[in-house]
Structure formats: C-alpha cells, structure tokens
Image (cartoon, rainbow, N blue to C red):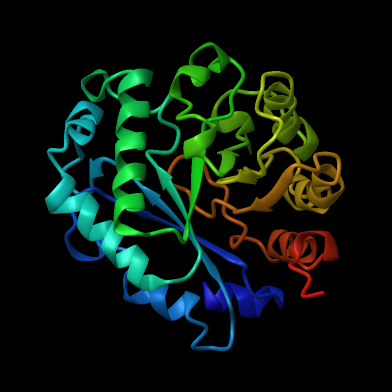
Length: 276
C-alpha cells in the first residue's frame, strides 16, 4: 500500500480489506496489526478503514448461513468480540457485511430476508456494545440484471449510512462490450437515483478496468477519463480501486503508463479530502 502511494505521490484516504467470520487470526480479527499501523498514521498519514466482513471462512470456503447469524448462534463467539474491538478502536470505520450478497450467495446462505435479518442483528449488537464509530456500508453488485432482487437485500434506511456498489469494465474477460468510466458507473448510479436510493452518500467499494488486447493505451486512457465521469455523479463521495487479478486483471501496477494515469486521477482535487 505505502509503496504504491510513494509511486503515485498521494496517500490513500481509504484502505479496503476483507475479513472472514472465523474471529481467528488476521483473516478474522479486525482491525489487524497492519490495518492499525496504516490507519493510526504511524507514517504520518491518516487513512480510514473500509472493512468487508464476509460469512465465508477463508481457506476452507465454508459459508455461515444468514439464518444462523440472525438466530444469535455467533453472538458470543464472533459478533460481540468484533463489536468490542471496533468500539475500542475509537476511529471512524466503514463496515460492510457480505458485500455483493444478491449476486454472490449460495442457496444455503438464505435469501434477501435472511440477509436483512442477519445485518440488522449484527447492527443491534454493535449498538448494544456502543460501537457508534461504525459507518454502516451496504455494498451490492451494481449490475443491471440483478435489479429485480437487490431491493429485497436492502437492510433499511435506519440500518444503512452509505450505499456502495462495484462497477467494472471487464470487457473481454467477461465477454462484454468496452465500457467507459461513465458507462460503467452511470448505469447503476442512475438506477439507484430512480428507485428510492437517492438520499444516501454512495461509495464505489470496488472499481477498475481490464486492458484492451487490441489497444495498449486504452487502459490508461480509461483512468484519465475517470474524474470527469465521477463529476457527473455527485452522490458518489468515495471510491476504492480493486487492484487484483483474482477475477479479472484490473491491476494498475502492471504498466507504468496505467499507474501514472490512475495516480494522476487520484491527485485531482475533486477526489482528495480538503481540510478546509
């Protein structure tokens, strides 16, 4: 993280990491030592954590069902200890629970009603503990084609502070047409504004583009067009890049020109926190 910051000449405002439901080791205990070092500003920076808490158990790929979570089966072993750690952390923290639930679930996990019940149960325990530094962030896929199910996964205004979604230009990796930043971001943004989700700040929990095998400059150009696109969608107040090749290769660190274009976008005043 800090190496990339040095390369682009900009410190990150948000660090997005993922944790499982084991409450064990660095995979399940958050904030972990690395997150504490990054967010505590030991290097002079001031970064906010965006932590994605999934019911998957990393390594085994076991999934905890939402019905079990809502029933209280994990209250004492997982949820309450996590809430206590976050309270003691005493810094603002974006917390997402099972992001992309409507598009990335297994039948054994349950349906939208089960997910909502699990979310609300976790929320209520955090409230009981007094972990009021949590910014509750509901992150869904944000893909046209899932709009018929996404509403059933919404926990409700009382339980959600920010709404997030994950726009990508996956192009040949997913046999899609090439989508500009505005096209990738705008389709779901506009759906949200038309369907009762126009009153919450929006976060892009993951975003990025793959390369175009027939145009070596296209990936860098995509990031040069990012800020002009974001300015068209004023409810988007934070973005977090998905720098990985786990699904499709959206890394910005594979080519100097791509890294520079992305870094230039990140240095733009529109996407930096202004102290005044």
